[in-house]
Length: 433
Image (tube, rainbow, N blue to C red; front, side, top):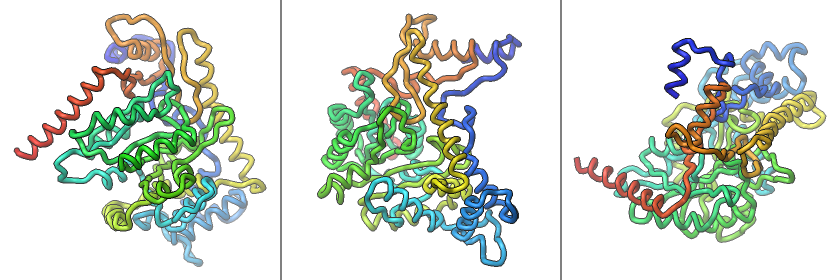
């Protein structure tokens, strides 16, 4: 990387005018068009004068009026500022809209009181699940390869990543034997609190089957672990005949005792998927089977934080209640979403390139290809390949090793044990000091 920047500073001409960053999930930075309906609703909420006349479609004006009433902005005579504070846990009517969305999706009832709206659901959840003052650090079973942001959030909260490996030759599917191995690795060195799963996978593109999800739920029940289900790419089903099954739906289908004992936190967001509103920030978490006393702590936690971005909450409302057939905005909304799918599906062209193979992408916005060639210049092949792409084509990719792409071996298991033991030892030393 330093060679690349040095050449730029030295005035070396490149065959491109800009660098395209493909290392993170920011669809709109990669030319994905924002949904017009979202932009029109936001414009109407920010500048209600647009509601007079035909500048905005009729269904947009109706949605804006409803949202302004939800927010307490429209008082029947005048409009207050959209920049005012709202409830710390999110707009109450939006909680009901999210609850309706989940109920339609899963075919089972959702309680609005179990839904919390945030700017960043994962980091907020970890503050609830990671206790302070424990003799052992809290551990969270985390897939490898996986999204780095979660691992950074764990470290910031003082928790440990306990990796379980997704194997390419098994289609990146979650394997029970690997989960059991990870548990054995952590015993005595940390207090396992939760199991983190990403479905559809990031960056693997794998989508769990309902049977696989139920196996994971049984495992979590056996080990008394909270399930943190990152389901932010649920709207991106790419594989033919693929259907998204939420962890909640599978849990409720299993019936008692699982359906009323396994603690589940399901996360969704406008920042990911085909909305791609990374800059607006907005998401929700639904908590299932959590002790009522936990809700008091959640309320205290949310009361100590500012309310979620109001612009994000408005976009979140559109995500869970989009234009419907027969409404003026439906055709354009549908066409822009299809453009998003075509952008994702064009990734398939990589399969035609020599020495590049990958497991079928079933869902999500990422592919995790394997590149086969000889190692050169003393660098790891994935690093070298990404550097060459950057230098020659202006394409910035993320090497697989940065996402935890590591082969499972006895040596790796031993190194995991040593790492957890050292982290725990250092924590105890710091407490003594």
